[in-house]
Length: 260
Image (cartoon, rainbow, N blue to C red; front, side, top):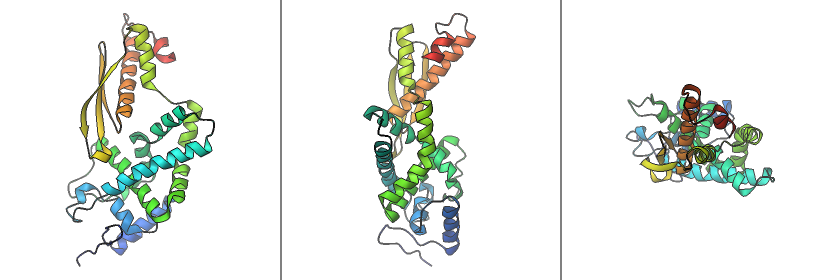
C-alpha cells in the first residue's frame, strides 16, 4: 500500500508494529508522547530519506533546538533567581552543548528506535554523538507540538535537573578563561582561535576551530564557535599539564595548570 501523508505535519503512516514499539519505548523512558507517526518522523535519519520521499527529522530538529533553548532559559530564570545573566548564559550553553544532549539521547536510548538507511551504521563515534543530539532535539519538538510548552519544559527540567545541580555544585569549567590567564602569565600573550571548517545545515552547523599559543596547537569541533573554542582550550590545557609532568624544562608548573 502506498503510504499516506498527514496534512498537519507532513508525516507518513507507520505500521502497527512500529507504533507499538514506539509506544512501549516512550512508556519505558517516560517520554510524554501519543502521536507516534510524528515521533517516527522525528526518529528518521536523513539516510532513510529515499524511502520516505525526502522526509527526515531535520525540520523537527530545527524547531527542537529553539524550544530547548527557551526551556533552559525559562528554567534558569524562574528557578535559580540568584544567578546573574552571565552565569545563566554560561550554564545554558553548557547544558545545550552537543556532549550533554548526546548524553541525554543516550539516556533515552534513542539509537534503539532511530530509522537509518541501508548501509548507515553510525560506526563512527563522532557521527553517533551528532545523531543522538539531533534525535533528542527532534523529540523535544514532537513533545512541544503535541502537548505545548509547559509539558515540554517539565520534561526537560526532570532530565536536566541533576546536571544543573552538578554545575551549581562543582562550578562551570571555563577552559578558555583558564588558558588565557596561564598564557598571559607565562607568555604575555593570548591564545589565537580560528574557524577552519564548518559542516552541516544552517540550523545545525558543526564548527571546527583551531587554537594556537606558541608551540601548543589543537583543533576541536563544537555546535557553536564558543563551544569549539572551549573544547580546543581544554585540549591545550591538558597538553600543558602533560608538559609540566614530563618536561624538566617546562615553563608550566603542575600547580599553575591545576590551580588556575
